[in-house]
Length: 146
Image (cartoon, rainbow, N blue to C red; front, side):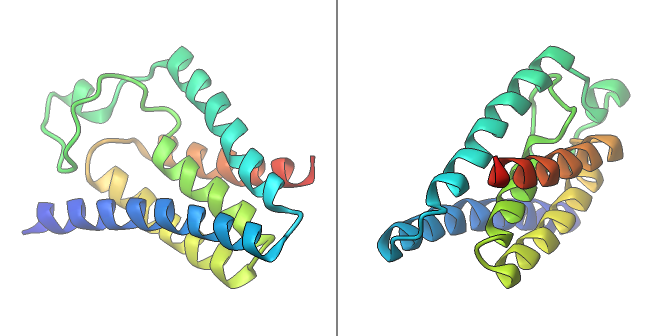
C-alpha cells in the first residue's frame, strides 16, 4: 500500500507538471505573450546542460550502493546526481513563477513533495534532490532574464 501511494504520487506530480507546462505555453502563444520564448528556452537549454553534467558525474543511485530494491519503479544505473525529475519541476516552476506567481508557488510545493518522494522511494539521495531543486531555481531565474 505504502509503495503504491509513493509510486502514484510520483507519477501524478511528474505528469501534472509536464501537462501544465505545455498548456501554459499554448495559452501564452494564444494571448501573444512575448515572454513565451523565455519560458520555452530557459527550461529547454538548462535541461540539456543538466543532462550532460549528470552523465559526466554518473553518480550511483542509493539502490545500487545498498543492493536494495527501490520503492519507486526504477532500474537505471548511475545518473543520480542531480535529480532530473526535481530539477525539471523546479526550473519549470521558477520560470512559470514569472508568468503566474500562484502557479509558480503551487509547482514549487509540488517539487518539494516530489523531492521527498524520490528520496523515500529510494531512487535518490537527499543531495541529489537538493542539488536538482537549487540548480532548477537558479536556471529558471537566469534563463528567464538572459
